[in-house]
Image 1 (cartoon, rainbow, N blue to C red):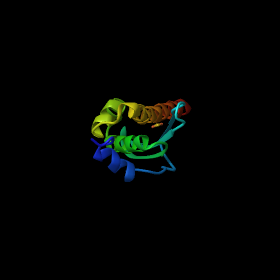
Image 2 (tube, rainbow, N blue to C red):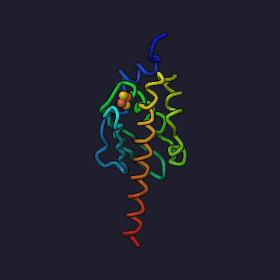
Image 3 (cartoon, rainbow, N blue to C red):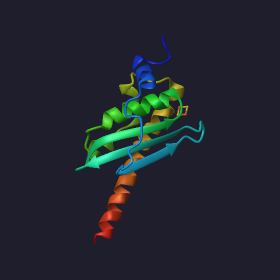
Image 4 (tube, protein in one colour):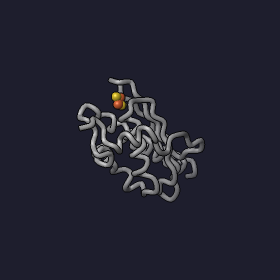
Length: 131
Ligand code: FES
């Protein structure tokens, strides 16, 4: 059996939503101290819906495939759903990852959660400023 599923290979070789959103409403950046890989997630949010999402991943193939799949899973979704995205869901959507590569999908979950934290932080600052 191949080590990586066809979906992993497809998202690794043809990653969706790669890039930067210059005027993003939220940016999340996380890293894995062990392997040194870094993932950055940019969100454009309107009416609590993820209108657009882009990512930059400086890391392994599984991390690239996981971020690509994760962006597909959250695009057009309400934040209430996005916040519940787990690395397990990403891994399942990729038809699995080898056990020693599961941590790469955790980066995708963490990058999205970090971007959401940034979004809520910015929003509360804006609300405070307008008080
Ligand atoms: Fe570092 Fe995959 S080996 S994220």
